Length: 431
Image (cartoon, rainbow, N blue to C red; front, side):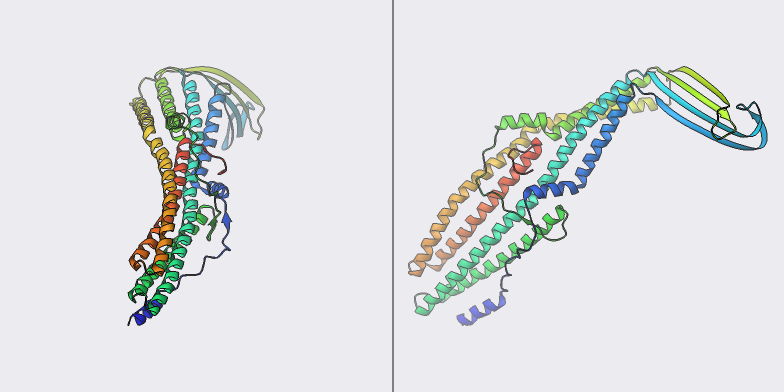
């Protein structure tokens, strides 16, 4: 009956799929980061914000020295003749060409406020580009490390299956020899079944992870991750206090918050100038005729105008209040972000330290689990231990191997998160 049950179990469990094909294209981490960043819509938008901010900066500087210039032309044909200023006679055709240049002599400091605002916007846009680049890198690294981790887990599951099949053969030999009960074979057959199921699950997850990595870098199919240096994760090149100080000084999120506050303050200052008189200089030259390019009569004027706003239905006050609220909100956001710097940097910093220590401990645990399994396997062959002790040793060895993989992935992700906060690479080689 037990032999029949074992045969039924073997038939009911599907055989593991063959090893994944080696024809899948492979990319390094640096290549994946470069390709994924170029395709990330958020990063493309961040580059566009820099271009917009640079043109805004140029316009604010040009406003100090270059007047606004407008060219205008008019061609008119009438059904009845009338007096034409250009020809001094009646005509049915009238043409006018006009050039107007205007310059703001006094605007209450609006141009200086606009200049400060555009400078802050440009600074924020550049910091936003860094933030978008490292945000894209964090997503790409997560997908890359996921592929590497699942490849290791597939290897671990295969080794578990190999050990289960090896011990099943030993158990059957001992059962035939009468040195063990038949339930030992049944227990090891169940262990092999579990190993086969776990292997199928990990291989499925690996295929999905490879498709995810391929999608991020612009490939339609699966993409494999090239192995990284297997050396132990290095020590961080800074203390926690230095990391917090650098984040506050150079971190893209904090630079963006400060730039937004400066831009909002400049906008509020610019709104205040609406209560001051505006003095402008305007020069106009015109030509009149009945031809397409008029030159018969030319006139030039120059004027200085003064505008003093008194009341515009409350629109000026509404705009000033909105600018004040925007400034206060931007200041509150910046202060809240700076207060949270210790928490955010400490979380990423300690995650790296803890994960690296966990990986070191997992390596020590793996050595113990390997030796324990070797001893239990030898003792089982000699009949000095039970099948339950052997199965427990097998499970402990698989858990120890999986623990190293998970700790290594957590270390890599923690480092990527800390680098995203600081806005720079702590170790060379990624980009």
